[in-house]
Amino acid sequence: MREDQIEKLRGVVRDCVSKHLYSSAIFFADKVAAFTDDPADIYMQAQALFLGRHYRRAYHLLNASKIVLRDLRFRYLAAKCLEELKEWDQCLLMLGDAKVDEHGNVYDTKDCNVMYLDKDSEDREINISSAICFLRGRAYEALENRALARHWYKAAIKADPLCYEALECLVENHMLTFEEETSLLSSLQFGPEDRWLSSFYSCLIKKYDKECVIEAKFREVEKESCNNPSSPSFMHTLKNNTDLLACKAEYFIQCGEYQKCFELTSDLLEKDPFHLKCTLVHLAAAVELGNSNELYLMASNLVKDYPQKTLSWFAVGCYYYCIKKYDQSRRYFSKATSLDGTFAPAWIGFGNAYAAQEEGDQAMSAYRTAARLFPGCHLPTLYIGMEYMRTHSYKLAEQFFMQAKTICPSDPLVYNELGVVAYNMKEYNKAVLWFEKTLKHIPSLSQLWEPTVINLAHAYRKLKIYHEAISCYERALTISTRSLSTYAGLAYTYHLQDNFTAAITCYHKALWLKPDDQFCTEMLSLALVDEGRRGIDPKIEFR
Image (cartoon, rainbow, N blue to C red; front, side, top):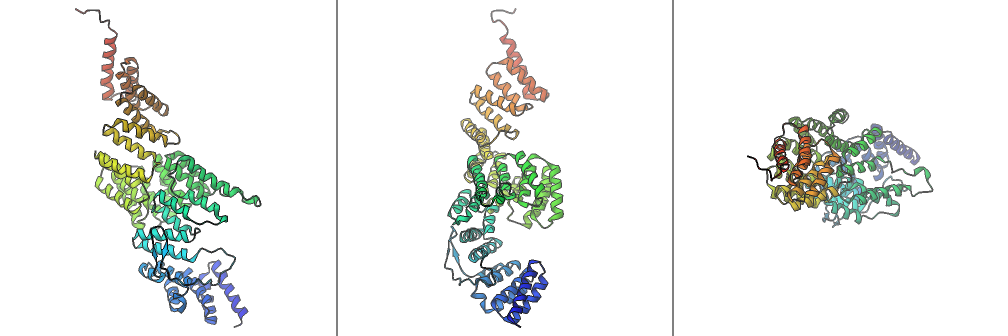
């Protein structure tokens, strides 16, 4: 057959692949390879087999070719076939020997030169070494060697910053702490044309910086997308990008701005209802807000559209957790962890469902598993501390809260729990310090943080700094005017100041909210007696 006819057949194969006609692509690629016996055509045939899900046949074809051990592309595609067949040890053997250190630096590689087979030279390629490092990471993660997987993912993104999958695995699976993520990003070598990507990656990592720093990162990405005056049609393209807005939603969750997060994710899901990262953040916000109707709708749609996805069954677990059917929620969280053992939210939800029924041992087991699997996530450590606090093991609780603070120094909930522990240990000065730090880390005071303000007032009252305590109680009343504990605490503080009239007024307001409250009933009686005694002239003698 003439060369021009063969070239036409190659074009047919490429067109079949682009139109997803894989059986046709396999048929014609097989004939081209038979005519030419060219390595490039054998590789094209293997690609068609791989895309048609004939993994065993594709692997046999590649392995039978003598070039597989000399050419990285052949070796990589053969390893991809073994990945699909879940033969992880064989996959690693195919990729060859190499060593990597904890910083992602690769040593002792014996890889041969890369051959670019049937590739348009104008295309910008992902470095083949980066793809191989990433596949090694996938294999080690499947073999539950998460330490080596972490190192190879770092090596993959260092070899080529365009290998987004590697960064996604590191960030989504919480394999790195915030400091390690920041250090890794600073070590990446971006080209001048990829400045926008550097800024975008900085928004994808953990949002543990101060509020002004995080917002500056988002502004930087938007600015980078606008700096191309020669192409006005591309202006502001990233400002409303769903991935970027999903990152903002994650930041709102981190700050405790659940309503703002829910509104943003609702708008995003209207535009892109199948954006799974945004869906996960939306579910978290809905749980925090107690929006069971939204959770039911989301879970129903996800199970219908993605019955094999971990996220779908996690959503079902969230719904049952929200309506306080904890046995059912545990069942679905457990199913989610069995589908994907590296899905951190399912492990945390599993533990929370046990904790809600005060089954501490099982809850601790789930939290410890999560803490082991996800060293970069502070939530398992935080919840372990909460469980210790529930059993009055305050010293142990404090240790875990401090560990959570080390991992995530910007979460206000961590500081709040440290304040509660200090208060229970009667260390009221420390409690005041932690509660004030909590309020400093909150962008805007909402009803969610009303208990923190009340706890701060209680701590000031214990220290007999009554004017500060009264100020905090009044601040809490600006958030909610129907809080029994606020009125009771304010009344008791006035009572301690011998301001009986104000105390009686506040006791009455508290009893209006809960008429059978024993503390307020008894203290109101005492306040009335004290007020009566103060109103009697001590010079009058009763006979």
